Length: 197
Image 1: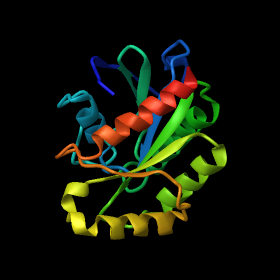
Image 2 (image 1 turned 90 degrees about the horizontal axis):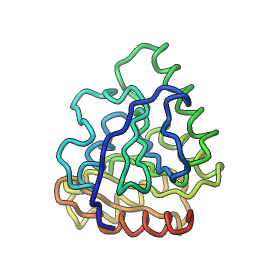
Image 3 (image 1 turned 120 degrees about the vertical axis):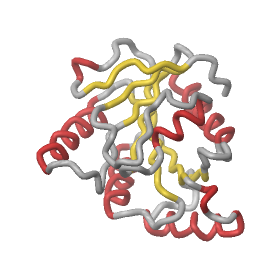
């Protein structure tokens, strides 16, 4: 997939702010600081389209990025260890759930985990929800450049086992540093988007 155009549209905290129209949306889910913004930036070949931060919990709204005037990446707030108040976490949980359960334009979900570590309890819960929803999904294990290539398969197996993912569940290893996995991600997105047309 060639990305010729990518633009930030809006940070929304409720349905009234979501972009209008019927174009498909691909949601990115993952723990705080797992690399969702870095993945978006690498895939669209822009250094700072999505803002990255070393401080977990930077994404505090649902961010919409319009790609090739045809579809959207939707970056949801990270779950897990973000240092925010309990009330803030509950507010995020409410609008994340609202988006995932009621957005008709949602065509697929990319769940992002860290290749270096076994998935957390939050990752497992989210994966179970995604599978139960029936929405097409892809598991992307980021930070592959921080694991030696000879250890990739071992780490992928740990992720599959922890998530209780079947053998045919799509898992992609990705590095926002080297770009490894970008081409495969593009293929998955193209195939998914073709099915929505």
